[in-house]
Image (tube, rainbow, N blue to C red; front, side, top):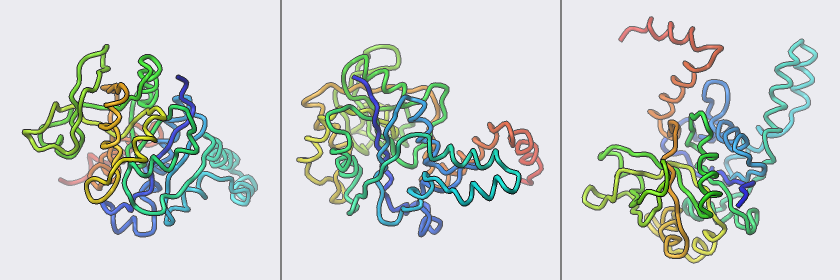
Length: 287
């Protein structure tokens, strides 16, 4: 079950990051020196993904422009003695084969993934939310692909969260399969404390079989009148096996201010170019 394709859901309106996202896609906000979505695409490419479909909306043409060549800028950089910078921006366009489709109406994550049906055909594929950035030694998508290829089923990335946080995610009912991999027997979206199955929550990464498309196509609208991917996964449980991977790594929700600031600080501290300077700079700030 070779996984070669992926979809990035990036059609949201970015309301948690207003006013900055009024005209700038939240996926294009800079995390140190690269836009958020570039980290996600690099993770996918490092996991063996070759073709990536980004589901966007009419306000997000900046992503299309960013992952394209810019010969005029490259020429100017070379003439001004900055060939390395010219090479760097050209590499951005060559990370993977990137395609786009619009979600013409805001109908939820499940509908956005369904828009990728023709692109994916009859192949398994990876899915990432456009504002979830991962920091991991082994790419998180690769950890999920390994589980999918081993067990021949869809897989979701999960980690244990606090009792307070689980109400914002999907709680999974699981049984062990192997080290850090579980069989999902049920799930519930945004549970009340008495409704949760466990503290394992789905966190922004998926590898899905094409069977999800038939489910999503016939799935009734859920919360807010939208079609949710989690509801599709719950329906898929009645037809196929679903694995949950307790992935090794840290996830950053850059779609909200606190998560974005946390990611900015930690990625800057890890950067060999700026880390030591930034660490010393933070010590000078008065509390």
